Image (cartoon, rainbow, N blue to C red; front, top):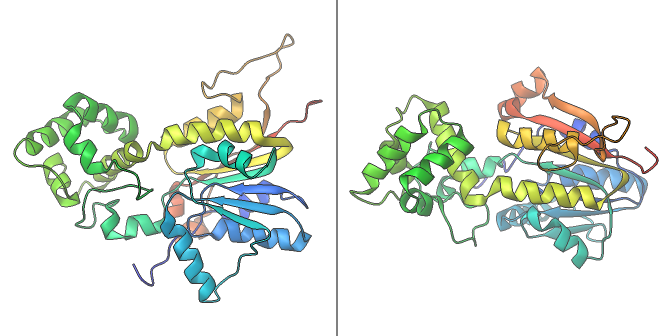
Length: 314
């Protein structure tokens, strides 16, 4: 959508402060999006005259948007300090190995979906528009939301809607969708809304339906798990990881990982009863201020969690 805002990052200042950027440090922004966080990190690095940033995004439109902004003189990127990686962040470890990076000083992840995705009708992320049922973050990926809606069994569909959308009536919605697709394939957003039999005024339920399908299409939680483990292993002692979450599923995962240092959320203790997590939790779920929510209503659901990797002697 020409002229539209690509993305406004939530709690930008708080997130950058949470990273505690050090001179000469190597940092990773695994969710480049509109480039707001990357730009802020690079500006901080310029003050220190050193360091390098790797920015990940699996959606090539994010890079195209950044290039357009650079051409318009809205901002600049120093290619000597900045590397864009067109990839899903689940491959963080692979790409760091590729670039010869053995350890990093900090990592930032803004797990929210960019404004661009919700506001771009043809991407199919929102029930507000008539569009093909797509929802792919990476447009070169094969599986779309239409494939799931038309290809999953009723039981599989109900499972996805319950796990990822937390829809209380997931079985009834799945049954209604399967009944509708038996007559003709469901290929568009408005067809899915009609098939689900969720009333149009029940926008929260529709949002949960679309959220569930988006998470399944992009394997968002699977990618998040892989990235967290890689970040834990790559972080130097004293290095920090800052994560912005936007729904309970990803927030619970990040919270438990920071507390325990593992995906199971199992807190292991030593002989003396001390927690053996490799992290010290710095931010425990900070929320946006009322003033920020007024300026950016989508920041309302954001939670910032920051953890620091402990030094061996700690």
